Image 1 (cartoon, one colour):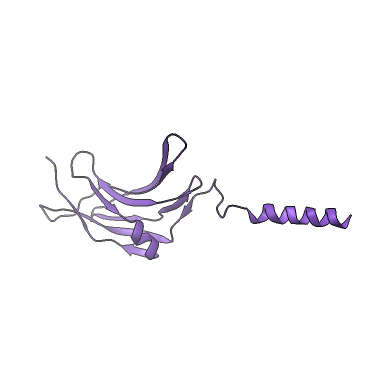
Image 2 (cartoon, rainbow, N blue to C red):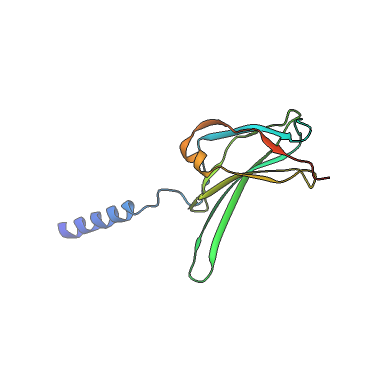
Length: 139
């Protein structure tokens, strides 16, 4: 009888030890807040209502086809060109974010800009003040 009890305990411990470190149905975030400014390179003036997105993506190879997933957090610049993204996704849909970038655009009025953040987010926490982003008017 004791043998069955010990085998039962070992099986329970094995299942408990093989648990995934993340709950795959939850989204996790870096311990960071991104902030900065967006300016017009020609007029040297701040640009308001610009969409700023922090996009986290993960990808891999499957049996036949590869896969990729991405999620983003967005905000808009204010009258002084200032933006603040309160959270950046680090883990989602059961995958760690392998590539994180900040993108800036305003309809088709200004140039599109993309900045890689993956290394910065792995090294820094708290409020991360990014360099001013300079874009130019398209028309």
